[in-house]
Length: 192
Length: 395
Image (cartoon, rainbow over all chains, first blue to last red; front, side, top):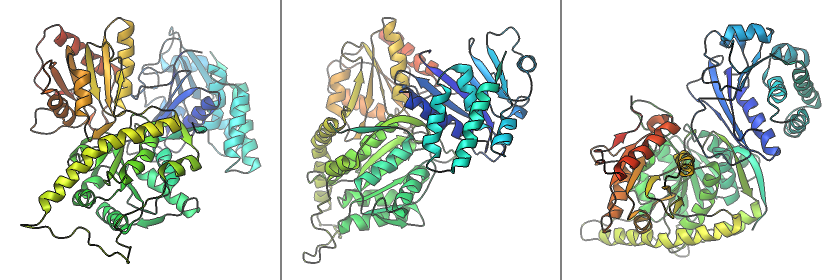
C-alpha cells in the first residue's frame, strides 16, 4: 500500500457520504491504520452537492488541509457528473468509482479520461441497494466497491466492522441487507 | 501508564467524552456551530444517566456563563462549551468568572466572528478573550483537545491557581474531523481529576461569605487584580506539573511549547492549533532536502511562555509567526506581538515576520506554508523583512 491514500467523496446531502467516509475510516482503524475523515461543511441542504474526504496511512497523519489531489474519487450520485468536476486533481495512478449502470468505457469517455493513467470503475450501487435494502442508500455498497478497486482493506474487514457497529443500532435484517449489498458491490464492480 | 481504548471519533465527540469522565456537577451551555455536537452528546450522556450532572439549558451564552458562575461560586465543578459569537456574548461574564477566581472549564470551538458571517475556523473569537484572565490551552488534534480538557480541570481547581481555563480546538478542522484518538478509562480520569474541594463555597451556610462584592474607590480593587495576576503567574508551574502527571498517566508528552527540529534549526515558524501539523509536515520535507528548519507550537497561550519561547528563538537567523487572527491596528496578530515582546530582552534578536492566515476557515494549503519557509530562507540570506502582517494567500 502507498504511504498515504487520499479519497474524495462526491454525493448529494442525505445520501450518506459522511457515513461512508466514517465507515471507511473506522475500518481502517481496525486494520491498525491512521486515518482522518472530514466532510466539507457549508450551508448544506438535502440534495445539494457535497464533498467529504478520507485520508488513510500506516503513519500518523499530521496535515489538516483539504484534499486537492486525491488518489481515489468516489461518486455516489451520477447526476453530479454533469455539474461537478469530479475528476479535478485526480492523481495519475489513481481511480474513480461511480454509482452508475454505465460501463467503465462509457464513463471514461464521458469524464474525458481517455489516455489518463487512472482506473475507471462502475457499479450499480443504487440498484444493489434497492434490491437488498429496498431503499436507494448507495453508501455502503460503494464502500464494498472501494475495497475491491483499491485493496485498502478486505471484504471481511468491512463485514466485521459493519456487524460490530450496526449491531448496536439496527436489527439483524438491516445488518444482513447491508452486508449483502457490500458483498454484491464488491463482486459486481467493473473496472476499465 | 493506564490502558487506553483507540477510537475513530471527531474532536467534539472526544471532548464530550472527556467532560463526562471529569464528572462536572453542573453544565450550563447554549449550542452554537461548530461546538453544537459537544453539548448535544453531553446532554445525551445526562439523559441516559451516564453522568450525574445538573444540565442547565439556557436562553443565551450570556446566561450560560452566568449560570456557570453561580454554580461554581456555590462550590460545584462546572464545565461548558461555546464558540465565536457565543463567546463574544459571554464577554462581561468571562471577566467575572476570572475575577471571582472560579475554576470553570470551558471548551471553545475556534471560529471566526461576524461580519461577514462565517462559521469556519479562525482564532478571532478566543484571541479577543486573551486579556480576560482565563488560562488558555490550544489543541492541534482531537487527541490534544481530549487531553487538554482533562488537564484543564486539574489546573483550574488547583489551590495555587483557582482560575477558569479555556480548552480551545479548531472549528470543523478538529471539531468535526474523525481522527484516531486514544481514550483513558473512566476510573483513571476520575482519579486524576479527583473531586473539587471548594473553599469558601457560597452554599457552605455554616461559613457565610460574600463573593464579587463592591470594591470601589478606596476599596481593594487594585489589590484584587494584583492577586489575580499573581495567581496566573503561579499557574505556570501548575500547568507544567499537571502536564507531567498527565503525561505519566497517558504516555503522551505535554509541553506549553512543543517543538520539532529546534535542536539545530536556523529558521523557525511559531504557530498555534491544527496548522502546526501542516507546518511540521512541510518542515519534514525541507529537512530531508537539508534545510535546517524548526517548528514551535504554542499549546498554552495564557499564561504565555515568554522565557521558554525566547530561549528557543534567540539566535535564529529568521522567525515567522503565523496568526489565525488579526489585531487590527497593531503591528501584527496576537501571537506575533507576544513573540516579538518575548525576544525584546535578548541580545541575539532574530528578524521576525508576521503572517495572518486561514481566516474564516480559508484552507491552509501546503504551498502557502512552503512560501513562509521560502520567505524565511530569503530573510536569513539577507532579504529585508516585509512590513506586516502579511495576509497569507489573500487574493
